[in-house]
Amino acid sequence: MRDRLRVPSIPSTVALAAVVACGGRAEPERTPPRKAAPSEAASSETAKPGPPAPAARDDAKYAWKLPTGIAAPPPVPADNPMTPAKVALGERLFFDGRLSVDGSRSCYSCHRDACGNADCRVKALGAGDKPLPRNTPTIWNVGFRKSLYWDGRAPSLEKQALGALKGGNMGLGDGLAAKAAEIGKLPEYASAFAEAFGLEEGATVTPDHVAKALSAYERTLLCGDTAFDRKELSPAAERGFALFTGKAGCISCHAGQDFTDGLFHNVGIGVPADGKPTETADTGRMRVTKDPADAYRFRTPTLRNVAKTAPYFHDGSVADLTEAVRIMASGGRRVPGVDPLLQDRKLSDAEIADIVAFLESLTCPGTLERDGGPKDSGKAPPSGA
Image 1 (cartoon, rainbow, N blue to C red):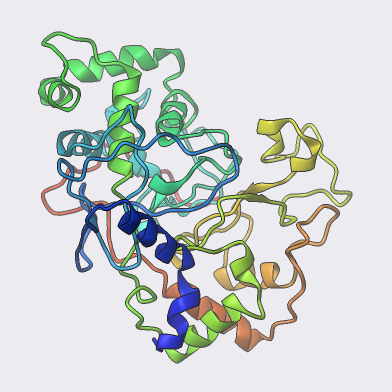
Image 2 (cartoon, rainbow, N blue to C red):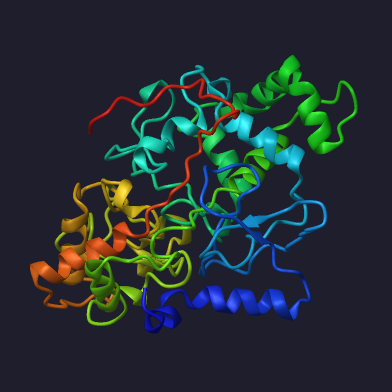
């Protein structure tokens, strides 16, 4: 990629690198592309709801390895510091179907390599094949989210993990505490929890222990070393990048090293013709804030790995990436209340194809399944709608 493309490409990477330098901390080692492992880190974004959690990072104890395109490790809560033992435990739990109410689902069941670490479905299915209301986003770079879920209702990875375990995803409900204690007593887990959390022999494993281990592992899931990061763009992708940052205006919301502002926008998807909230409609952020001004606003998704995570938008209503780009470049679905940042950019079919070529350059080279790692004991949700 030509040097002139370098400055506007990932502005937040430069800013984060400066913060690391000013703090006097040595920059973590960078590694070439490989399959995702527990020592990899996740990426960053800006987000609206509240200040970030206090960070506690001890690089002398946990060796972050950052690929090209990621400037610094993700923030780590003070009450859940990173350790190799905790990350390894979280990885095992992530693939273990016994964490669901009926043994049918692991976290990996809905974040599969074959689907860009989403699930290829229009809307997710939880334990017992229970339909869930929204599309599954990719899990790559989740460590830098300041809020989780499409509506931002979880303020941290730890809270999101608890919500997924208790809610429809894993279906444990009020049985979560009993399930955590049961898992903690298994011979293959007892010593792992003791090492990760310093538990005494016979201590009860709690939902917080499970959530913290899962979150530590998920913070290591990084999408970097893409063709874009390596400056290996095709001519079409270079043209697409120029459109993305210029005429098409995509950069207004899809900025930074993770190509998202982390904020909430109404793009007209799933909005009734009059734009007004209803009791039955999915009103997105409004469900959290109770503010009608937030009706139909949903979190801006990362564009990393977007070429592999169809279908698109919070409701999975658009099956094709080209059509998703066309909708956004034409100003979203034209209903009252659509974010004014969305305008009809009057792009040609050729220009839309170039933007798609650029988005394909953001495809992650890594996988969650790896040689010597845990194997999934859940099952993939049935394919289809």
